[in-house]
Length: 224
Ligand SMILES: C[S@@+](CC[C@H](N)C(=O)[O-])C[C@H]1O[C@@H](n2cnc3c(N)ncnc32)[C@H](O)[C@@H]1O
Image 1: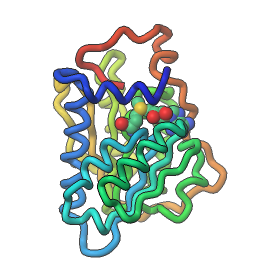
Image 2: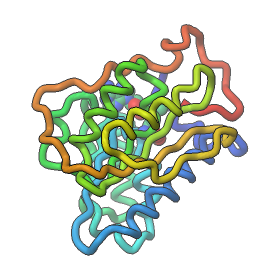
Image 3: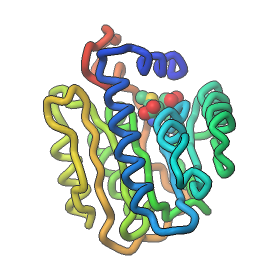
Image 4: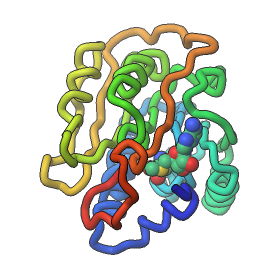
């Protein structure tokens, strides 16, 4: 999978990808709207080219308060995310080229107010999804939100992911409709954050194509 070219899906009108992106941006802006005055800490795991976070912050009245750390493996995506953030005038935007599974990359930026976990859960094993959800208790503060995505194709793990969050002190803030053509969830932490586990690895990024054991065939409405 070429994870730089993957982002071209956002330019496919009528597919689930731009609609998923718009939904994430809307939910992200809602979280920004409810933040108290002062800095807003944001982390984005496997943040790609930053379409969600940069798009949501562009023109938002709290953009100057946002301190973003995006972690992304593909240096081309890191470059594009930095360029997009600069074009949007974001003053506190860090894009780290590295493995988002490595907790070391979040030191100093968590517990965050908002964590974006978008385009990840469709690319890792169920056990790693649950493990990552568990570590979300280290990534966001009490009252902080995790905005996450997972496609709704069978086997549909989306309801189980909700359960994994809710077993760990997160409340369901919003979830997309089952037939939306994509899956987006917002869960809010209701507990004090645990300290970041040093040296932990949250997941192994397998890739949805490998997970399914087939090459992609241009899905019409589903999203990874
Ligand atoms: C499905 S895309 C989602 C990108 C972005 N979060 C979005 O929703 O627009 C998955 C991204 O994960 C990145 N990626 C893959 N393995 C990674 C890893 N171990 N650490 C960080 N990023 C990784 C890919 O390069 C790709 O940009």
